[in-house]
Image 1 (cartoon, rainbow, N blue to C red):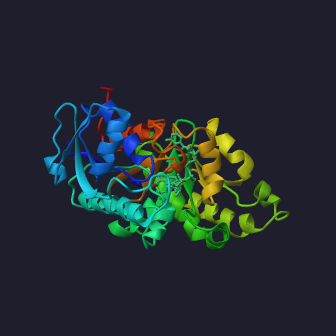
Image 2: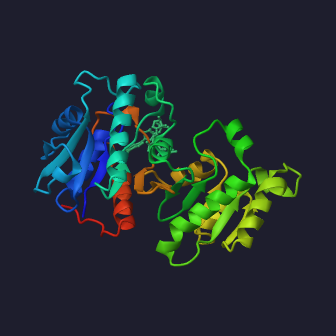
Image 3: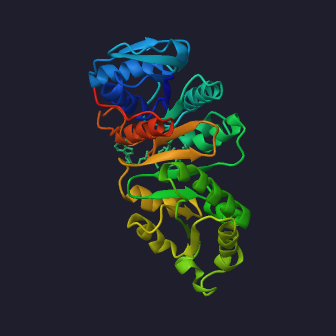
Length: 330
Ligand SMILES: NC(=O)c1ccc[n+]([C@@H]2O[C@H](COP(=O)([O-])OP(=O)(O)OC[C@H]3O[C@@H](n4cnc5c(N)ncnc54)[C@H](O)[C@@H]3O)[C@@H](O)[C@H]2O)c1
Ligand SMILES: N[C@H](C(=O)O)[C@H](O)COP(=O)(O)O
């Protein structure tokens, strides 16, 4: 098995803390290589009083599995005086460099999967990088046109028609083809693990899914025609359903996945169920990428209270997707 690459995320955020807490749990059972900032990792390890030896390596192939050792590829060196808990250009560039390096290794087949700790969108912007998140970096650097974000937990799965966009732009971009594209992506992503076509519920856009045109016409003009086309292609899909209850119907077993029309339509119900259980999977890429379902949590950096359970779920999901067993805790 090749290593799983874990990117450290924004060096001013909780990324280093959750990566180290995860490594302390699984490092002796899963081959990991961390891409990030060795100085920030060492400082955080000392703050947390974790018994982990950080070993700098120059490529994933050099990442060994010696007990107690965490291999690190240093993709940045931000320095000990980098302010934490605030957005900044240097931090944004460092976070990007780790992700870009991981994508290169994944495209070359040097790692089995990428698991990402959170980066900060404002820091990316301050660094002059034109990406709203990992998803768009991953798509562009891997040359992927057809992709989307899936948030998954034991309770609920959600896929997004539009991702990181201002709401008014997202609404303007929703069309039949993009809904159909996301239905196809969700089916392809979930069919292998479910062993059958996933039951896909499509959310409407308007209150009560427009209620036959009383509260908006997108359901009649765009969403229902897309669902009809998808059904004609053989997908197990239905809708549009009122957005305020479709997630409950999925959580109680009615659907395997919900197609949400925009970011917060899907992510508010998902995250409300608990940040510690969720994983973000980019579907459509030529390699496996999973991530935490939370952000850089600038308000708690350095306090030692960051919860690493979502990163653990992300690692377990990545291992599942590459056909490896979930690790035991060490
Ligand atoms: N995968 C990613 O890279 C990712 C995911 C979500 C948000 N973000 C980015 O992170 C930045 C901050 O986002 P935000 O403030 O909206 O959300 P956030 O998830 O960082 O924080 C929201 C709240 O949840 C708490 N929280 C989050 N993760 C936690 C953890 N692991 N343990 C304990 N408490 C935790 C925070 O302390 C805060 O109170 C933004 O730039 C956002 O775009 C990145
Ligand atoms: N939409 C994600 C969330 O709220 O959890 C987050 O922005 C991360 O997206 P990327 O994986 O594209 O960075």
